[in-house]
Amino acid sequence: MITKRTQVGIIGAGPAGLMLGRLLMEQGISSVILETKTRDYVESRIRAGVLENGTVELLKDAKADYRLKKEGQTHNGLEFSINGQRSRIDLNHFSKGKSVIVYGQTEITIDLISTHIGSGGEIIFNADNVLPNKFDTSKPNITYQHNNINYQLDCDFIAGCDGFHGVSRLQIPIKDQTIFERKYPYAWLGILAEAPPPSNELIYATHERGFALFSMRPPSRSRSYLQCSPDLDLNKWPDTRIWDELQTRLGSKTESPVCEGKILAKGVTPMRSFVVEPLRYGHLFLAGDAAHIVPPTGAKGLNLAMSDIQYLSDAFLNFYKNNSTAGIDNYSKKALSRIWKTERFSWWMTSVLHKIENESSFDNRIRLTELEYLLSSEAAMSSLAENYVGLPF
Ligand code: FAS
Ligand code: PHB
Image (cartoon, rainbow, N blue to C red; front, side):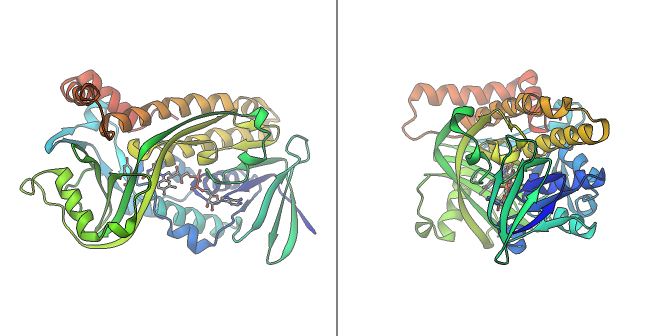
């Protein structure tokens, strides 16, 4: 067994773990990031696409925003399509001057990894049997195997940034956890295509046949989603069927056709809301998808991981620079406050835009009335806008 030492041991090289490693390094705090997959695998995952201002600021602090500044697309509005009737919501006006940036999570991951390694940061890919230990003591460690050699990483703190299916949350005694969860009776079939999107802004479409979302990956690709059954068989969804369904749910071809092209990736994302409380167990801290999941309708998953990391990196900085435990003692309460507000918005936007199979006529009419009220009320659009561009970190 080879023993190594660092100040913060980070499990997971997704956006949460990478951003934490970057911010700590910029403050002179040492960390080691342990990742179970290969670098190629991590850098090829296709996920989120919309960045809140807080996330953009963190990427700047992490010195990983060079490409974002060149390639990111600023969006000042988005559209809702209700059974083919299109309405634009001026996010910039209703959020008093804010906007979002469209830039893929895939690119963020690539930028964070290259910046961290380029700055001398340590990311261990292909780490096996990663396990946080003794986090209920003042001498926690993480054991793992790499190239068939056993390691023990001694550290002051462990950050569990290993996603919903990671190992960290599972090491915490069930009696010490409170789980809050909602599973939705639908999923999203997502495609990435070499084809322009039907509009230069995102379109959230609700239709009698179900929800569809039209997003993009600048400069030439579209990222689209169809509400589908959670157990959808992709083999029964050839490209032609996907394109036809996207056009149907968007409405008439006249206003803006759905441009077809080569589908580069296809996948089904389940929909769930999930929170575990609290987020701290002794010297182990959960952040990002390891701590919470939101349905992607509100474009919040990645951004919520970033606000967790803002709070956690500030807490570690406060400990090491000011010898104060105030930040780490308050991390869970502070992060959960923003997590729950984001869970609420993501649940609301999902529920109002997705038609549940055999939805009662009353529930269907209430849902459509909710949308009609939203589009007719400045107060309602201001509320949507302030949540969509991102509540303050
Ligand atoms: P991540 O899951 O990104 O990263 C966790 C990392 O930990 C991974 O690299 C994993 O390999 C690693 N890991 C796991 N177990 C480990 C172990 N035992 N040891 C070491 N490493 C381990 N959000 C949006 O806002 N919009 C979207 O459209 C959207 N689409 C999504 C589609 C899919 C299929 C999924 C799964 C999520 C999607 N999300 C979306 C949410 C997503 O963007 C997450 O919020 C974001 O990746 C969270 O980042 P992390 O917390 O870093 O977790
Ligand atoms: C995306 O571009 O992948 C995307 C955008 C907005 C969402 C979800 C996903 O709400």
